[in-house]
Amino acid sequence: MKNNFALLFKRLSSETEEILLDNLETLKGGGDSDDTLDGGELDEVVITPDPDDEDETPPLDPDPEPDEDPFPEEDEENPWDDWEDHGDGSETDEQEEEEKTCTCEMQYKEIKEGENGEIPEIKDPSNTLGTLKNILSTQQSSLPNLVIHGDITQAGIDRQLNAVNRVASLVERIENSGMNIRIETSNNPNANGKGDGLTSKDLSTGEYVVNISSTGNGYADYVLLVHELVHVGQILDGQIGFDSAGKATMIGMEDEIKAYQTMYDLDAGIYGTPKIATASNIKSDYPNVYDNLPTKGGKCPVHG
Image (cartoon, rainbow, N blue to C red; front, side, top):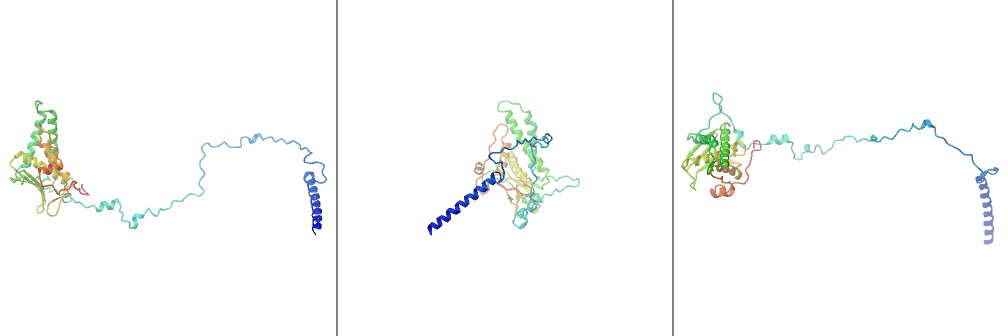
């Protein structure tokens, strides 16, 4: 059986070879062709470009515009843009402005005009404010005319004149404010033997009362009045209010430092050097008076 299989394989192999040779002849040039691929020659073909076609190709654009996006994105509303309208607790600026509440005295400020439309004068039965105004006016006139010699220096004159002018401007502002102010004085020094001052509100009349407890030293009383007038200016600036008992609110140590410094500047004169007001030296000069006062004062959210 093995020999018969070998003879059959040999016969099939021989027939296959003859078929391949016949096909090869056809690929070379066909069974009846005399021209073969390996022996024949082809005519030369020359392709000449058409001169009319040279300028038909457009030049390249050095700055080509980008092709329009075939799929442009459409503007869609961002669902987070309206988040404030969904109860997150945030508020617009207008809402916040409407909800601000005045905590100072400007909400009660009324200018009560007289028959001729004038602003009412400050009530000053002891003429304490009137005397202070005279002192300020005298110094404004005399200081520029002082002759520089000895201990009188131009720097001292300029410094004192600056202090006087600042206080005079403060007094003028308060007089033109329309606030109902009453100035009271008494010979009643504090426990430390020093003059004392207090600004409060008389709830029965709506008046702001500036009280000076004197030691009998006239000029010291006027300087002390300056201290309290600084506080009146702070009321106008929305930095001080009053509670239901007529006691000052929102006041801090920084407000006292400003009042004391203004007082020290005026009191120094042309010869001295103004004392520098600090929390520590104020508390040292007036023990137990400012111990519970916060460092920073408040301010009205509307007028401050």
